[in-house]
Image (cartoon, rainbow, N blue to C red; front, top):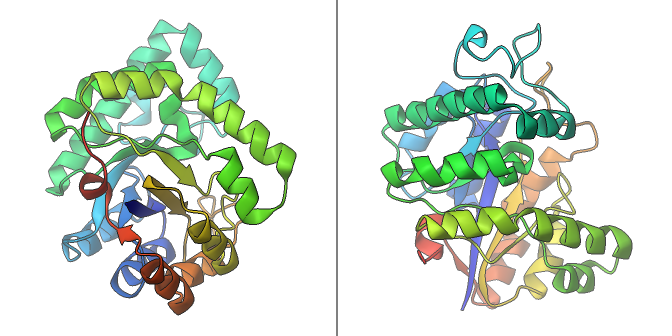
Length: 287
């Protein structure tokens, strides 16, 4: 069986993102959304999610390029003078690996994000990380410890398989191959840890090599080459652009992604291929 989870990341980042999530779930193929607990429009996202009982809302753990849930004074090593996390995940990830104090602060912040999600009253459908930072060894260890108190939600494994990705698109051979190799190696520890903790995982993702450019054409191509098993397509949709530091990168195409999620052609293709659309908890079996 071909099971497909269709996720919108950065839920809560802005009102245009939240609008896109709600509409794409109601009128399109969106089955899940990943909620940022420290984002500016978080409360609006939570209010919308409570009215969408079939939307799988998960936790989008954030330690880079956003704001903490805890006061900055409690996590001074994680934030700059502006009170925001670092925008350099490589530099921060390296520092986190070697610093016990940073790991302590990161655990406090992640625990606060889990606790904030608990207070929403929503069922945690899945766990992933902003910029896939949940692959970091220190972060995956914390996830494995905390998730048991949330009924063991599944965890995203961000590996896009090279052969289906390239045969679907026929472009960027080198980038798709190197991306597959990098994320396969980086996610091995994450996969072992979360499965040992009793958490389910998806088989693969699409959207990693086309982040911000999951257009209708691209989604139709991936649907044609969709392997058996449990696959996740993930998006960064929005109904429009917005001003401010939290806007999506300039090269992203959030409105085109929103159009793909609500496309009648995409819906018809998924139906014709007998693809089962579902949120994480419904699609992923526990080990």
